[in-house]
Length: 121
Image (cartoon, rainbow, N blue to C red; front, side):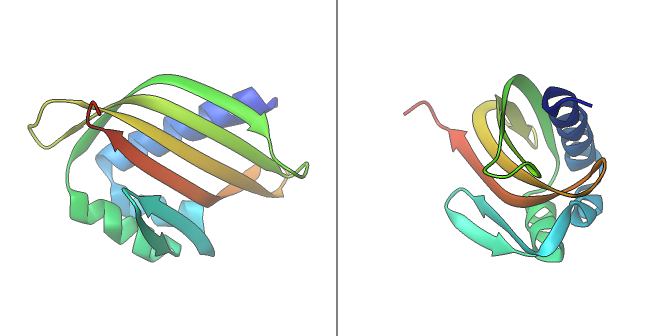
C-alpha cells in the first residue's frame, strides 16, 4: 500500500469517525500523542477524544490532502484542508496536520496533530 493510499484510508476513517463518534478516536492515539487544537495542546488519546467531545457535533468536508514521508521510513506527514460545520453554524475553512507513526505492517497511530480554523483573516 502506497503512502497516498494509507493517508487516504486514514483520513476517510478519521473524519467519518470524528463526525459520528468522537469518543472512538481515542484508539488512534498513544499516551504520548499530542493534539494542538486552535493553539491549545492536549496529550493522550482519552484527553484528545474528550476535547473533541467538548466541541460537539461537527461535519467535515475535505477539499485537499498532501502526503509526505516522515524523517524515518515508519512515519507519514499528512496535511488536509477543507471546511467544517460546527453545530448549525456556517462552514469554516480549516487546515489539519497529522504525523502518523507505524507500529507494524499496516498499523499506524497519530503521534502529532495540529488543527486550525481559518476565519478569513
